[in-house]
Image (cartoon, rainbow, N blue to C red):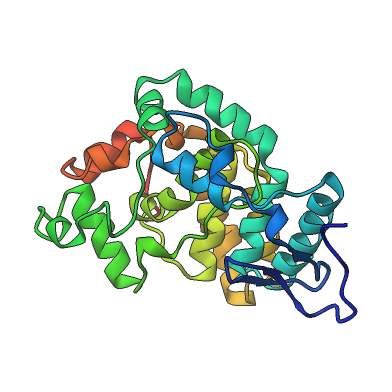
Length: 274
């Protein structure tokens, strides 16, 4: 067998070669080099994302994927701050939703360009310093101010590893890399209350199961004072925006740095919480 169960249930899942570790109480498995992709598998004339993804993806049997899904679900529920486990959960449970997202993106002109070009959002592709020079009412300035205020970087997103289809893997990557932009346009902080609210917006907007899970179980961990705010204001606001907003996965954010933030919110049918 290409995997083996270890005796200590708290040992990490270790992906040899990649040095990637993700601790899971229910899935102490080891994936070996044979599970890794190779350059020989990359289709001819593939784009850079596909080449990198196929080279680094980790192949799993259906049983392994079920174990990873179960383990990541429990770990994410136990500690919603475990972004590695939330990422695993998204990759092992989101295929049907990602197919629907792909169809919606291909039906939209802006979305088709995103899928064709496969742009990435990180400090190698986005000039953060230049965004700081934009007018304060521009989306680009609002985005970089959000990063600065919350002391975060666009380089912090986990790579997609546990999927087979390169296009769906890109869409999952795009979702992750655009998460901070959704925060910025919604004017939501990165604390637990803000994260839960944003997850509700994303869940209703894109249908990813992991977003629903994070929204529901994240809310259970709110403190009493936060829970009152959540039920009184944040939840109704999030549900309204999630239902009414334009499909956000078709927004080519990188082409909109100079767009007025208020005009953008109006176009996307987003109302900020007052």
